[in-house]
Length: 419
Image 1 (cartoon, rainbow, N blue to C red):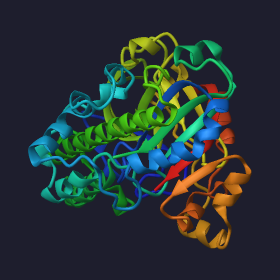
Image 2: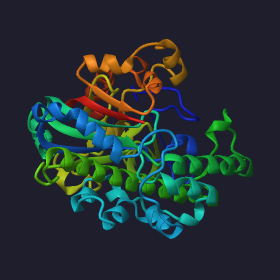
Image 3: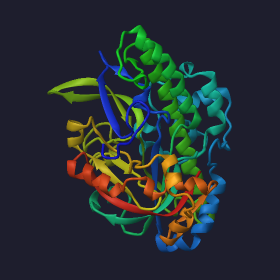
């Protein structure tokens, strides 16, 4: 993908598919932040209404949604409840009163990946996960208040509830936190041994893997599904608190403000899917690491509400520029296993960005662009500055022209929460 950059094992911005019958599954093809993904909410509010209250809104969001390195959540679950989170994902959070019923329909896999088995998750991963449910985290994770900047496909945009320039959106980007990280760490060790057991020769030990249909492969996929479901529940909580924050600031219910979920999609995951290869249907394990599923119009896995236009694809940029929403295509099914890019992609490592921008006042620079930022680490903003990233406009131009996703609209941040 054009947002490609260096990653553990597989590059970030990569897609790989292997046959379930004789292929392998690799944690390096998914990443440490299992089901890192994005969730987009639309509103009926306009930029003119929100800008005068952006400071108050960011204060509410920052107070309501725990963020930052090692942050602990407001939702502390028991071991029994964590098992339900692992197996039921967003649905569990919804039944606890967090969110709206139509959130589920507007979530990839309805917010619950099948095949999850909590028995395949270590005690250490569970211990790390329990305090982090309902947290944004740090690094490139964020919550942005955005305004629609340009609409390219009015029919598709209208299907998503986006009608005009200046309409306000909320974009959430986070994943499975320390829980998913530990699941990946645990199985890298298991699969490093499996490589020897199955006589698999690798050019790099970071590509540790096991046959998809082996005990080790099945166990990893079952644990990965648990982490994916944790992430979907995590974003469900954050979306709920985002709605509550808007309600407190604007004195209206989320329904009165039209705060409906557009879509939630993963971009670090491995999934068992059917694809046509050489004119024949094959069952594949599709690894998407920093890549987004982009299924076309008419595909049965696209929610009914979007089946006419294709699956929404959420492509965040950096906090100083803009983000895009696109839709999937038939070309993606033919060329990229139904996948497209996931974001801008880094140009500088975090360390290089901090060294390059040492002394720069990133918050002030953003303010000069009309973007308010709230963070617990001003020094950490340098790691996420625009200079550290490719221009997402260049990235989506490639995917649009290649036909693996088609641009629908562009938005720009007016307020940013960073961990």
